[in-house]
Length: 299
Image 1: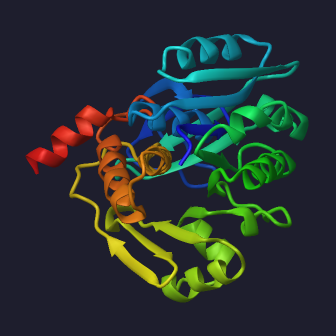
Image 2 (image 1 turned 135 degrees about the vertical axis):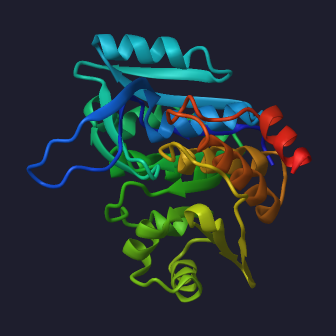
């Protein structure tokens, strides 16, 4: 496999609000605190892959505002190659509510992320073709995801697609997806069923090579070829789950880029995702590979 991971996706300035419980419609509740940090599914997944030890290139769009300058400065400190497309608009932002059970509700303002164009992706064709794995999500326009996916498909780059948040897939997207990673809500949306076995088989018959469904505390389910199974998650006292899914995707891509099996990559990704839940902040909570390996050894 060609070396490294290419991530094309969103960057947001995250504002997390911590509550004992979520408010009902029309109700006001008091927050115990807040945290402002880097986020966005693309940025989180790129940072996770980099902290997992992969050689990462991350392409994203930022606005011409203070938030964009803050994000670029923070992202430049991660051990990855950063390719910023500057747009004449606001930078993306996310507002996250986290309750006393560590459940979260997230509202996203797309901003510059939704201005990332197919032409921007085509300008990165050589970088996409030169990497072993391309990672995409749904916080940039569908046509931009599709453009990048076509470049990867032509060049033999393995594709990992995390279609979150849910929206209809662009025509041909699933057929070019090597590994589809979804949570339970997204799985139900795309498969039309809660049955993991039947739904995964349907998605594979429609074009995906492999399907991975993350199940929170229950670990994850996977299916590819004639193989399927579940991988449990380690017991963790979670305080913030907002970046767990992105940590999983980034670690999965990094491990696959090193030639690991799907099952082996899933086990590492689950360990990292579980560990990310023990810290506040989506990106701030992503562990390094040394921290994950130390935890695995100590268990």
